[in-house]
Length: 315
Length: 238
Image 1: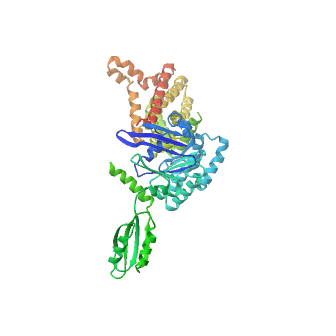
Image 2: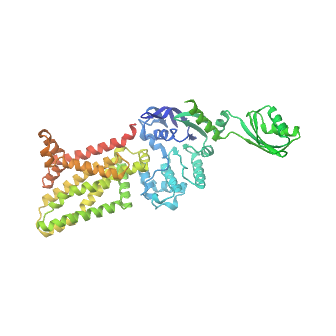
């Protein structure tokens, strides 16, 4: 549906997007992830025909964004970062203006408006100035304007910034629902958001692609050891010795020791095998007793941090 | 054309949904009437001449107030990004905005009609200069609006837009004034007089409607609208 080939965008000396290529398939929800200033917004602006790429091509549903910009724009619903809206306009007037520009016939306009108002839960704010609405409602008006022409593709740039937790959950649910029938690109630097809503994730940093795949693939692909917290009763030195002798354990330190009582050990283990079971067996075999065992799997946060900071180190 | 109409409507709604339109209109009508009547009774002649001679100066101040927000606000609020990613051509947006501010300016101009009828009831008026005056003021206002609109697309600060528009209008007015033309080198004098907004206004205002003057105004308007389209496009130049 969306094809980005070797796209570079420079602003003077600054390289915002650096030879980036990716593809979004029909019906896919792609999470476009990167730290602030990674070039996410610039990339979205190129896909939505707001600005041309310095180099490379972007095609949307087979139409080039430069030569066929109108075809592209008609197919995309776009919610830019922080939902820029006309604050001195009535929400209903605004939606009707967008419907007009989107070329929705006046006979269908009322129906389409009613539909997006329903989807986005905007009934109560119709007739109010957008400037008087809360951040959450503005975001929803922004979403409504992006949906009004029933586009095949939806591009959302950080749709949940500035919302409270309840609103965030609401918007995410909405995106999930919409994502079932549309192709969506969701830009974000918030990881739980992306892992909760997206089929596939693309991580960029300093304009370059650093990783892509499903959330699970990404976690698996990132090399890293598991961290195990174990609270064990017994002689500290002996336990430590036994732990270090285990197959998959790479390192061990005592986080909290308390004479005769239980000590907490933090061990690093290779991801192969079942470290939880190994620790338990070791404890049973040696007649220690276990009061707590907690394994931290590598999270998407770690993947993200690793990928984006590693990239910086090599430069 | 449908898109031009949509933008036109949207801008008009914004004007009248906020206090700007009302404030500008009331101030303008108040000023214009005050300035006119304070000299009208002293002159003792049933003529609108005074009105039309001061109108360019009033418009010079009020046209930038009307146009200042049109692009600057879009840039400040970032709504430009949303607008320009809709299936809307740059020139359609420019024309829609131009017509909306021209509409407001024309409304301000037409609000002086009661004044005209009042004057005509007081004595025998010569309708030629009055009709010419309205036409000239309309064209002059349209030129100011096109200048103000263009300047507004260069900044995101409305105040800066208003002040710079004022100076551009002022500059374009005074280059054709006798005193500037007189001091300029002889080779430039003719050009300056032709470029100046004022000389054309004066000849239309006398009731002499010459196609050259009309073409002059249309050229100025077209030129600044063209610059405006380029200015909106400039986001793509990085």
